Length: 196
Image (tube, rainbow, N blue to C red; front, side, top):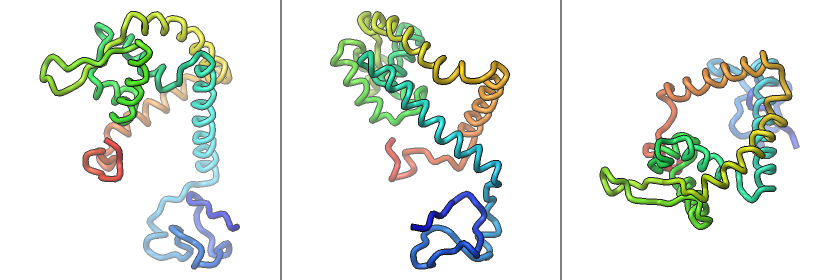
C-alpha cells in the first residue's frame, strides 16, 4: 500500500493511482501552491514531538496504574489540591487539564465512588457543579505525588540537560499562548462534531 505523507511537499513522480489517493493534491494548482508544507527538518521535529508526547503520556499513565489510578484522575485530584479550599467549578477543572467537560464528569464520578472527591451545587448560581477534594483524596494524593514525581523525572526531566529542559518549557509556553490567542481554534459550542 502506498504511504502518503501529508506534511511533505507532494512530488508528482511519487503519485499513486489518483483514484486511491484522498486529501492530497498531486498537481501544482492554486491550493498546492498556497500550502506551507513542512521541510524535512520541520517534519522530523514534528514527528518526534508527536511520538514522544504519546510515549510520555503512556509511560506516566502506566506508572500511576501500578498505584491504582490513571493519569487523568491524578491530574484532576492534583488541580483540586492546589485550588483555594480544595475546590473548583467543574468547568474550571476542564479548562485546567484541557479535557472536555463530559470527560471530566466521568472522571469525577469514578473518583467520587472512591471517596476522593465530592460534587456539590455551585453556591453562586445553583446550576453549576463544584468539585471538592475530600480528606481521603488529599491523603491518597500525598502518597501518589511521590510516585508521580519520580516517574516524571525518570521519563522526562532527567533525560535532557537543564538547558534543553528550560528551552522546552519556553517552547511549550509559546504554543500554549498561541493556542489561547488563535481565533481559528473552534469553540466546542460552535463545532457540532466536538464534545463540549
